[in-house]
Image 1 (cartoon, helix red, strand yellow):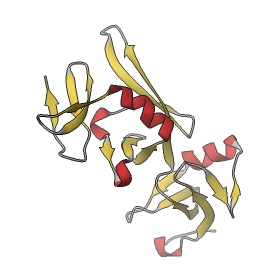
Image 2 (image 1 turned 135 degrees about the horizontal axis):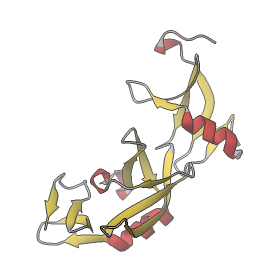
Image 3 (image 1 turned 180 degrees about the horizontal axis):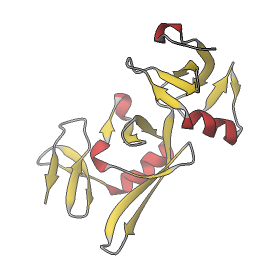
Image 4 (image 1 turned 45 degrees about the horizontal axis):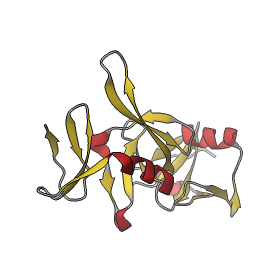
Amino acid sequence: MNLKNDNDIPPCNIRVDKTGGWYYNGAKMFRKDILNLFYENLRRDVSGKYIIEMANDRCYIEVEDTPYVVKAVYKSDSGENNNETIKILLNSSDLEELDPTSLWIGKDNVLYCCVKNNKFDARFSRAGYYQIANWIEYNEEKDLYYISLNNRIYHIKGFDSQTYED
């Protein structure tokens, strides 16, 4: 199909649930090679809808929350400067460095961050949330939650969007 107009984009009959599970016509998709192909070709249109776009073929997918889910979180020292980093493992099997400035709290106190060079949001799974919670601190005086990395404090947006330095 050769699509010229965004209004002509059909649905793919693919749905991504809030846990990051992909379904085609209600059947769970499990083949990693196909899911990886979809992730590689995932885009967003100007209205924020998710599209799988390969060559001249495009179709919309239904996403319950986010297509990316943080499954695991790792904190480590990195490089010769011993800088602390937090790595996140996504449901796409990609391991990325967390941008702590992108953390935010959404509806029902769900934690999110930006991934893929800030192109997509990712929802933290319960396991991922409990792992990162080990490094979340609370400042009673300022009434804010934050993560401290490399002598910087990164506020978790939901109250106020400032980054504080020690």
